[in-house]
Image (cartoon, rainbow, N blue to C red):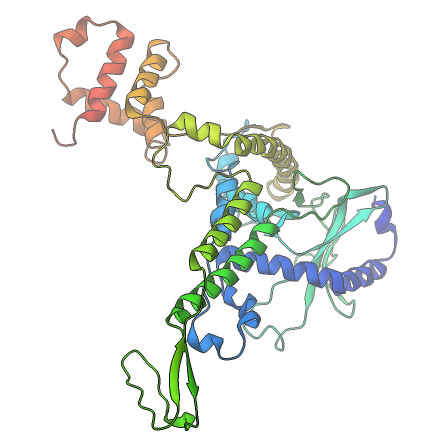
Length: 455
């Protein structure tokens, strides 16, 4: 059964989609989102400040841009900093979703940069793929203006000549239909194997992420203030370079002199037959400009719950860092709940796709355990913590190895093999043999890890 909005003809929907995709407001929003992506990837961002330095100024100094956006976005994206543990009662799930952790970390960062964003879940080469969709048009059921029942978006072009060689094509997805269309409203089958232009999965294969400040509007921004601050700081840094460049003053000539005969430079001598030459030194407060740039940086960091002290406070303990970042950690708690819901929405889509593509089923539920944020602690305190865990049976040697080297010991059998090899090379002292069993475990592990390879 079609959703209420989809009861109108496909031609009407296509016409509405084209109109919205080409509307002025939509174009401006998409341009802003594209600009945010370019600031995040630090891709030719100087083009956004060139118009502020027209004329001969760019001949005097180059434009000074900063890769600030990515640093801030990555720093506030803590939900997938460490991969969560997904518990599904199916041995093949981790195999067919092997790229999920990487793509969800990327998706979280794009979400924190752009705000409202869609995640397309699709099947390719017997594996799930996850593709963020940045610019799209949602279509709603009139009874629910926050949950799209269909989406349209422009298909990326495959040639460098994006203005002439290929016409614009768009993709349409709903729970029942799937097709491509052009600007004239002509529909095309998405693949040769789907001439009926139906959605074989019976669900809209998109999950949508909304910022925590979303109330009653589908489109909400998230990190655009970071992008605009990056632009302002690029302007300020370029102006600072200009003031530094002009610190030597401005030469002024009084009297009649042929300007073609004047050459000024650090390694040139100026000789004038007529006229007088003087130098006007500007009274520019360069330190004041630098403090203004620092204020802008500090302000945008604080807006996103990040402490920023220019590295002047030295090394800090884990407790001090946790206290300083308490607001950031509280914001992360909200993000964890948001992405837990998103993960379950994605899993429902995966269930449908997997059933259609493999004629097999996933279990009804998935459990997600998001990793906690840990701050560095002093080596002595860390050793005491692990010894306490060993004494109370809360951890063993394998847990320790996987903690200090999660990639090297992701497979528990490798950790067991490593520990058996180490234990065969380390003689036991009488004191160790007489110690309680739990203390022996901790002592052996510390000695094993402290013994250099090859001894």
